Length: 199
Image (cartoon, rainbow, N blue to C red; front, side, top):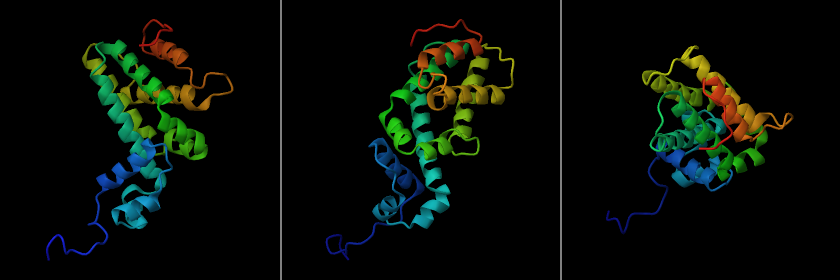
């Protein structure tokens, strides 16, 4: 059968990477990630997507982790400092990116409960991965001479929880989204002089 005479039908079975790309496209367009629409587009069943990612939460988490890792990779090429100043610069860039990123803001505004469950839970799909990325940043700084007084994994967890509090959780004290004060506190935790200047 020639290409021209091949009947139109569902595309060949898609991969996990294609599912993630389709979900990312919806997320980055500030649209609700629709598993049923993705399944129909790629010729898959929802059961297959759920088998790969566990749930819609798992798929959303994979999208966010992928975007966070992409942002950190881009920041790594733009930050010239070493040691603790490099850690501060990278975390500060990450915090500012998260507060200014329109798709993240849309998701948090329209799906608050889901966002909290996915992003800030230690049992969710995002926080453990982000802690791992921050731990790698700390390990690289230690290789450059930074002396960390706490084990890397614990310190990375503490830094991530602090960032979460400032960016997402603590509206009562007036610090939600306050990246300037967050930068100052991160500096103190890293043994640096606090300042209120952005990067």
